[in-house]
Image (cartoon, rainbow, N blue to C red; front, side):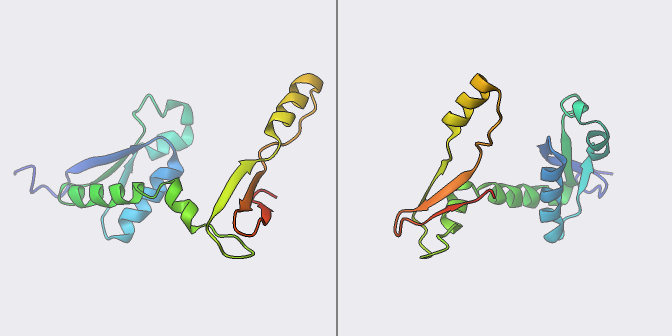
Length: 139
């Protein structure tokens, strides 16, 4: 029996080091009708410290779906942060011309190290450049 015609031959198309990422990619491929097997998912879920030792979670598909799966995953990887920022709009004027900054992180850092008083500093704020409206993402 030739390897190319073997329906049980699984090809690793991607490796992941976090179970959630692996499940999202597997769901994406399953939605396209591609059978998926996550090799090592149970090991990583039971003991995440061995993730690097076993080479991560291997996303495997049957040989005949390998090229299609790689193409689907590569298209999904192109959705980077700059593209996602274009989807974000100002709640007041619906403009997509937005800037972001982290609120008072330098002051918070100084207070924690000098006085050992923790102040949360990861409050993301957005400012609309069109109407100057300010809003916070973390509440």
